[in-house]
Structures are given as C-alpha cells and as structure tokens.
Image 1 (tube, helix red, strand yellow):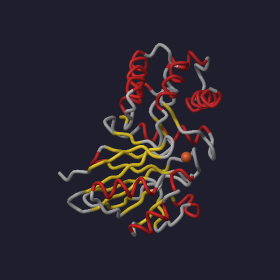
Image 2 (spheres, helix red, strand yellow):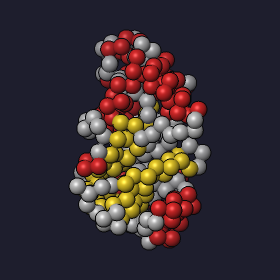
Image 3 (spheres, helix red, strand yellow):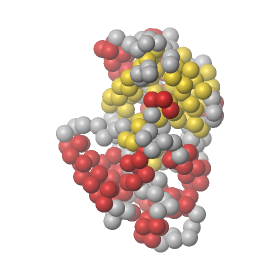
Image 4 (cartoon, helix red, strand yellow):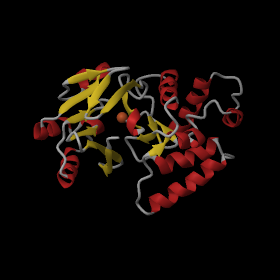
Length: 256
Ligand SMILES: [Fe+2]
C-alpha cells in the first residue's frame, strides 16, 4: 500500500499550508497557496518537488502564492471550474465527481459551495483524508459569503457522508474561538466540553488543533449537529428543517 505523506504548517496570521507527497511517485501537491515563500521553504527542507497546486477557492489567502509557486516550480495549477477565472495561473478546472490522478492516489473533487460559489474540497479515500478549505473548521463552519445557508448545509452534509475515520484538513486555525461559541449552543455536550478543554491546552502550548477527524466533528461540531434534538431544543427550533437550524447557528456565530 503506497504511503501519502501529509505536511501541515501554519502561515500568514492563521492559515494552514498543507503539502501532500507520494514519495514513490516523486510527486508533491500543495493544497492552496496562502504563502509562496513559506511553502517553497518547506519544500526545500523536505527535498520535495512541487508538481501540483490544488486550489479550494479564489480568496486571496488561498491563492496569493499561486503565480510565484508556479513560476518557481512549474507545478500544474488545478482549481474549481465554478470560479476558474479568479484562480491565478489555473491550468485545469475541475468539478463534482472529477478524479485527479496523483501518483498512486486518486483525488476526488467534491463541490462544496457556500463560502464561495465555486468552492471545492479534495478527498483522497485511500489516504483517509479530505482537504476542505474554508467550508468546515474544527467545531465550526466557513462563513457563508457568496452562497446561502441551505447551500452551505448541503455542502457540509456531503462531507458528513464521508467515512467517519476521514482526517479533515482545514484552511485556518479557528478552533479555540469555535469551541467557545460551540458551548453556547450545545452546552450539555460532554464530548464538546472535554474537547474545548483539550483545545485550550494545545493552543496554550502553541500546538495546532488540526487536522481533525470526521467522527469527532460529528460529535462536537454544532454546525454538523444542526439536526440534533439538544441543539434544536436549545435554539427553540424543534421542527424547522435542519438547514434552518444551521442558518440560525451561523447567524449567532457571525454576531459572536
Ligand atoms: Fe476563504
């Protein structure tokens, strides 16, 4: 079974850069390009050659390094076809169901609109990993900038249906603030209480709280638990469609 190395490191103010590497195939991909210099430095330190850049969405803190990385490495830039004209240096546009062959691995494209209209996630079933950009965060969700709440809820549902042992790599370290907010809408959730404490300890040591795992998110992320009776009761929405409960949680978080 070929191995996929995954290297995550912080950059900019609260972004994460992620490199994936198939040593046997000699291929490396960067998920997004928040900071070209930081990524080039890490590639040099690992002795990896960048072959692919997989872009989740057009925001500048995910694409700012595209052109510099492409120029420095000749990597192929792949991004969402829904916003291809806003992805600098794009070579290949992809959408729902597309499969990108990467060494020994197939990377599956999931369209996850809401944060932006063309946003995509990249799922590698054989590596038990998904790269979700700004759609989902640990105990949080992305802000709904271009789409609407129902659209975002459907995107989150798509991620919720992946195998529960899937490791989730997110674009930002927002976990501590998300945990504090999560406790306001799901205060009696013991798993959440424990996790909030654990996250506080990790951040106090300057350690990352990511990647997270889908089964943990299903237990502790209030945005994924919009259909849970305890959250519905807390918000006074026992019979609303789940996406409306999600919308209410999102609105509260925007104001928090
Ligand atoms: Fe974003």
